[in-house]
Length: 356
Ligand code: SAH
Ligand code: SF4
Image (cartoon, rainbow, N blue to C red):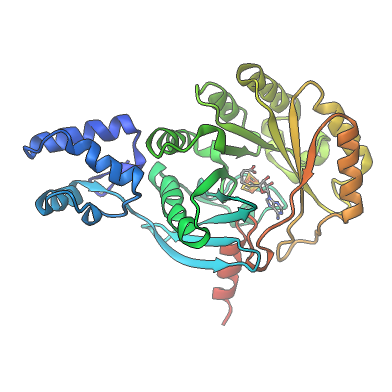
């Protein structure tokens, strides 16, 4: 919640932000209406510093600067892809770096943000998994990616971010409290619609249950990648802790409470998890769940032997799902030229920095 002893305004719930501001303003003999004035700068106008708040007395701005904090990360790198995708690296106070990606499509822009620096879950096909886990992100470090990327989105595309997906570096439900809090700040503070926010999980059951318990209609995506437990275990060590049956039971419970479609992510790796048999097994496993499957051609990573499935294979897989009553779409990879898959940009930059 704090950097040094300052309160991070993007790192606390709106309720808490109001209490903290009210207390300080009272102490400084300032009128209470300033609370909403300040917060409309923070959430409405995406102010990055108190000096931006030109309708406040200078002395108050200085005091706020000493007691509260609005920014802790700096943008350390930006890459723009020929397909419009914009990728950012954010340098955190301790030098850690995380990435976020802005993806324009048709008439809307999606932000993919990070929830951890690195990831401990070690999925075999993932660049972030290769980096290992460094540390959790604080709530404010998650929310800042949105606030700052939204400014870029308006500048670059002439429109604000329309969708937020927690699909960058890290496993959101392995950093549960800050992630749940960041959802509150985005939704109740920045007034970003809950239906436009998707949390993607590798399948941590307690997190799915926690999201199911929230009153707001945040969306859930589950990274499945195989409906065969044995193959899934090989690809994703998390399968040992939360086996497929238990995971799908949690998804069913989520759906019973939320009555909304759940998306499943399925990375298509050539010759590994893309057979017709596995597509049929997936249909069987998802029976009774109102689902939507995103088929993502594998984005190759330096040092891994795998490649993306052939387009005909993906088509076949998709038509088996569709005829089994499961809607599915192929997600064309974006920003390939700037290493836009999760964890890739940081990995590539670290590799190139390591070279003489
Ligand atoms: N930890 C969460 C969210 C971040 S990963 C999760 O695993 O769901 C976001 C998505 O990118 C996941 O579905 C993940 O499996 C996928 N992904 C990881 N590496 C990839 C790669 N090299 N190519 C394509 N998709 C990849
Ligand atoms: Fe972590 Fe998700 Fe990558 Fe797996 S796919 S290592 S859970 S970031």
